[in-house]
Length: 255
Image (tube, rainbow, N blue to C red):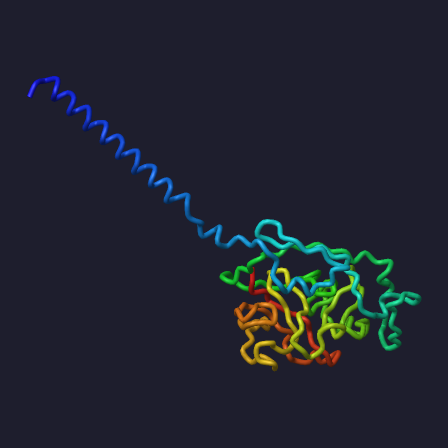
């Protein structure tokens, strides 16, 4: 074989090697970008159906990335003594030791952000004084404390649906009978992104018996189309001072 033929053969070999390498690199790139990543699979593009139960006159709810933003005026559409005399929703409650503020002159507005998909893999977290969630009425939910002390000290100021003003915004401490009274109704959502329901469970039609320390368990609800999800219930244990039921004492499980 002449030298020029050898050079031609070497050149052809190099060219074929280069083309094969380029094709391999292109194939690798296509494989890594054509599929949807695990992270993309977790992107939430629609609000949970349960948010449709929230009072649209009081709340504005929307997705922002992986979180749900809930903006509320904190003004419910149910009766209470805390609306003040003369208001159309004023309810005379002579046994309530009413605090000085009334709804119509108090700033009850609150905005919270919660994970669209609660993280149930971490440790439980205790609740704190202040808003721990938003009810379907648009009102804040508080825990079993009042200020720096026990709820007992302020129990006399709670209205017929377990709410009062003092201090800060109008809020519920107890089962809000205005829209959930010994039933499976949606009560609201808490700061960890987990929904809170009444004392009964839609999947069984009675009081759940498998609740954890937070009042949570995993089952289908009236908003999950047969799918199971973790959620809280108001625990069916009477709070002795009022003869009613605490809305939520904690701890959170979804942080």
